[in-house]
Structures are given as structure tokens and as C-alpha cells.
Amino acid sequence: MEAVAKLKNCPMSVRKMRLVIDNIRGKDIEEALDILRFTKKEAAVWVEKVLISAIANWEYKQGDMDADDYDLYVKTAFADAGPMLKRFRPAPHGRAHRIRKHTNHVTIVVENRVPIDEEAADEEE
Image (tube, rainbow, N blue to C red; front, top):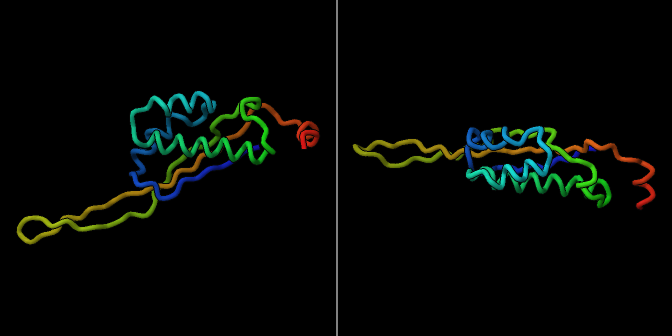
């Protein structure tokens, strides 16, 4: 069973975000959270929030089962370009320089490696 979490319109360029996203793809959630906590990039803070949200979404989907028992891992993680704010800044000699403020969309999918017993899940309810 998998769960998804998305972050839309994050105020950062996609290129910077992908540097962090590539580090956690395919890792166990504990290892991924450790990597994000010790990464000195602003993107790591955003990605950590999305990963925690994905874990919470998985637990909610399973009926409040504990994620630690099912060996969750980051199945898919990617960042896509979002809308760009375009502005102009005054420059010398009556000219204008273009300013492009990039945004991105982050998507993280977590899945369990340990299979879930359907009968055990029904008994808990």
C-alpha cells in the first residue's frame, strides 16, 4: 500500500530542490529523515515536511497502524517546475533587467516493504 504527499508552489528553483530529492529516493524513511536533518540546504527543510506528511498519510490510510512495523521506504520522489513570477528591476541608462522567481512542485510516494495482513487489519478495526 502506498501513500502520496505533495507540496505545490514551493518558492525555490527546481534545480536546487532536485539536489536534495535525489539523495533520498529509494531509501528507508528513517535513513531519509536522517539525511534530510543533516543536509545544509534550504530544500531539505521543505522535503522533510513533505516526507513526514507522506508517512502520516500512509498511517491514516491504514487505520492508524504504526509505520515502523512495516518498513516504509521512499518509492518515488520528484520535483517539477511550477509557475514563475516575472518581475522587472530598474537598470542603468533607462533599461530594465528581468527577474524570474522560480517555484516547484514536490511529490513523494512512500510504500511498505513488509506485506500487510488483510485479516489482521480487519481485526484491529
